[in-house]
Image 1 (cartoon, rainbow, N blue to C red):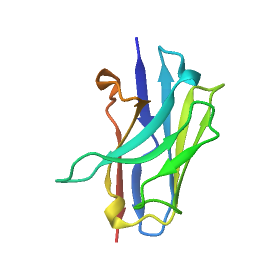
Image 2 (tube, rainbow, N blue to C red):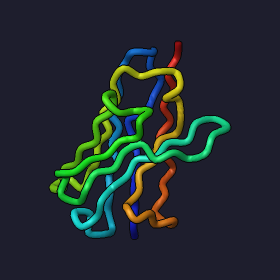
Image 3 (cartoon, rainbow, N blue to C red):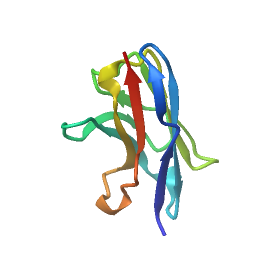
Length: 116
């Protein structure tokens, strides 16, 4: 059974940091690029970061570039999202998935709330 479980969210003040984790099971994790999406209140789901299957290539949305870093540990079947200099507009539920997206792989996400 495929599972992608996000964790590490929480409440943080503006300017603070959080590290999110995405733990995968049930498929050959190291064969897939992984993406992080987020969905803020009243907003559509937004692609914010991508990492290649081996971890050598990453891409970011302009809204998070320079503040967020995606990484992965294929030995642990886990992808991370280090989020620094957080802003209130980063408040959202954060999700991970494979790339290409598999609609049945979406997890519950992890809530990040940034207070001003």
